[in-house]
Length: 178
Picture 1 (cartoon, rainbow, N blue to C red):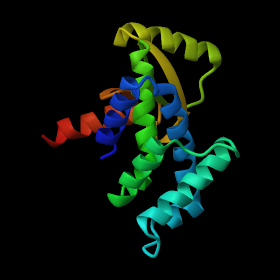
Picture 2: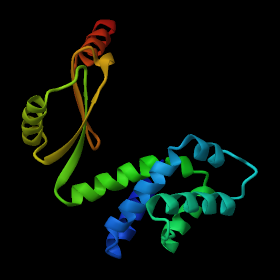
Picture 3: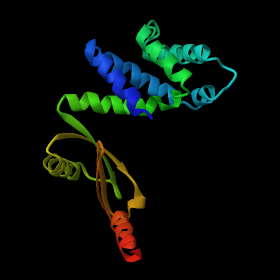
Picture 4: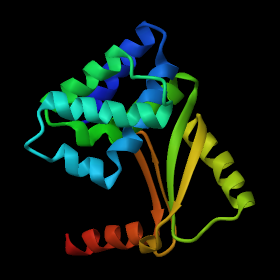
């Protein structure tokens, strides 16, 4: 559900040459939306869309710069999200927006899950192999997920490369059931 918002905002930001400004604003909004008390506000039916938007905008402005208020375009975007009950999508909207921004620079973001923590030299070797495999320059975001049992799970945009033990076991299980 966040993709259409992220794509629309990216298109608008690119047209007016404000991609970096929007990226900073969306990053701050995503941080604010991830705060537990703000999540409670978002789900509070007693607040009007205008009150909710103003509150989030004020919190965001105080995080970014105490003397700066959000541009009218960003405020209007927040209001649209509030009116459509989509404020909880702010972190995902930022992530998708940032992926488009980075991709436009010729770089893609690779989300890497590993069963065990990797050494810096292993990450470098993995990056080189994945750059060749996906035929792109990648920024790696590496996290540890012990549920994989072993191996890695790579996600680049809509492409998934599952080289995990868990993925292999699930594949064998499906094959045996059929």
